[in-house]
Length: 218
Image (cartoon, rainbow, N blue to C red; front, side):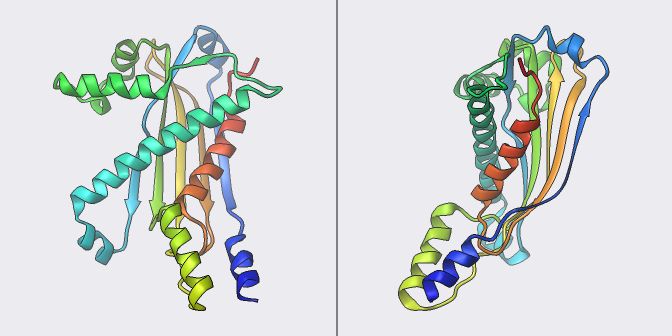
């Protein structure tokens, strides 16, 4: 009975609270020149409870934000490529995220701040025609590994330890034309997760929704 209850609670679905897609009138004219696109690490804001923030410290939270941003970057890249193998495949090439991050590290080692560079300069440095940039807000995220530990404790001890609720308050993804530096496509989405939903679950759901909306279809 306890296991059934656990499975039921774990199966709480992610609820979409709304999405919106934006595309400029001249998108097709600009997108046709895009032969390669780079997906940048996402900007992530972790909104933690004050006591948790105090325990971790600002440096640790910043490290977590950067790590989560790279996780979402990789997740989006993989989702788009996975969609590319299906019927409505993506016709534009994507720069491998490891190569993108390598160049970003080189720029940083040269004393430059990639996050402060213009879209045109950054596109030139990366050798691409367009950029995918995004931002996500996560509230009280936990890892899938820690969530699994709580599951094991609950099953073996009969205790009922809830996971901290994780939810993406908002997520935004945009395509920036490297030549003009303007945003030509955008997607915003809000998701909420149940008590047994980890941040990893939310990221996958967000990427699944965004990749389905992504343009550049053949």
